[in-house]
Length: 269
Image 1 (cartoon, rainbow, N blue to C red):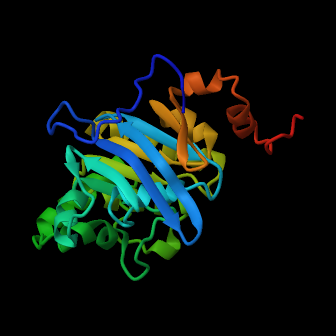
Image 2: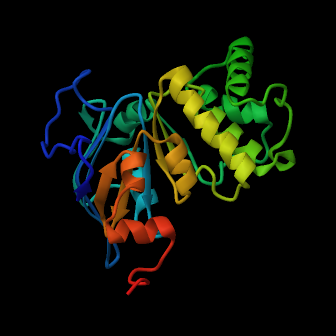
């Protein structure tokens, strides 16, 4: 793995001490094979509490597969995933439910329920958790709409929302229970540059306002440079580079240069 000093190298230890000494998320030697294809070949990665990590890489390179592993939606063939000091591999669905309360996820298409209003979509996780007080639900929804800058949109249906508004509603739903960490799967995909910039500002605001840890899977390099404290480049199933956005921009590594410039490998030969 190429690592730009002085960025800390992910530890290879298989045990983390719970508490403030451990990272929010730690991935150890994660491997996953789908059919005959090796998607992840020993991924090692850490995400510090309160930081934003961008995971970049070529299409089909395993970024979304890695993201799904972080919430237990996929089971690895080998390796460990630690969330706030707890290894989630091998947990039951009930045990995973407690872990998932700590993690919100914004899916690529926002994944709103078409038959529900904006307010009903945002309140859905609260209702699933047993909240029935209409006043509490209204206040929580209103608070989240203020956070994502969609005040007064409670009664709208998803079909009447723009792509950017759907992303915001999806994000509001993912953070309504105040998770410690939010995972973003291509948050600016399909959006124009102006709307993409507003989503990037929102990710930064959540980090500052709510202190949330964020993991952003993206192919949008402008987004990666705008929001991330650190960037990890996933290449051939492993983390090839880990460093700051500035260190990535200054790299002379040909593989990274080809990716940043959008060239096919060997184009300069």
